[in-house]
Length: 276
Image 1 (cartoon, one colour):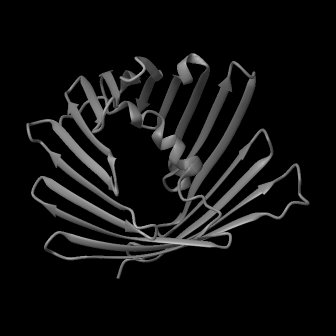
Image 2: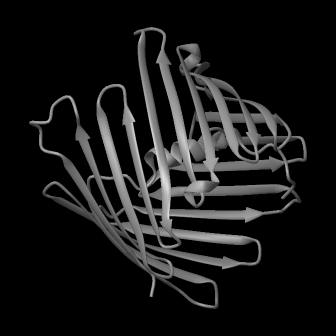
Image 3: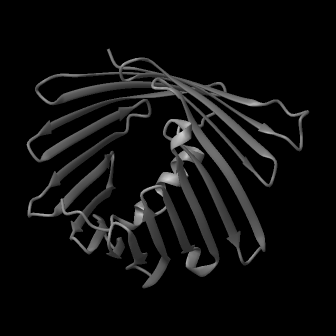
């Protein structure tokens, strides 16, 4: 793939990962294994409240093609085929979730040194068509995305944004929800925190005059342990501890608290991911 501005879906993703990735109030257990032939297997069990669910996934890679198959406890089968560089500088993704045959979707991504384009269409009668495009460089990029419903002839969504990337920081502004909301995020890498980072994110919805300010950080205690924390202006506090108990096997403990209602029971999550 060419080194270019990246996909529009990646705008603000690294900042969002610091604030949301691995946070959970569920209990999760997963175990995975892989072979030299390119086959990888993963089993996952999730308990949320008094309900349990799970899935078994298999992934097979061969040259520039990847096949993913996932079977969950509700008897749904999700199959995804990904082919890269056929033709050059493209990625094609075809997916379907059985038994809902109308859930089929085909996506094509094109990467250039100064632009990227994506088109996705549902494989059903009167499907929705999703398109996105970015122009620029790995340092500064402008982008937009839209979803058009062919049945009604209306746009379901259209968003636009700009992303500025420097060696030690990333700033993103996205105008979303058909112009009804704006999101600004800023991530700054701190070398004194062993590769940690601080993040600030502001969300404003114009129709309701609602503002949400969230700040967060991540800190590498050592090469195997990471702690994260976040707090917003509504008093929601989150914290996370992730430890690599062995190579590629992680134990994650997270919690969420409402600092404006301490009488409420805090929420805790536990995740164990093993890769023998």
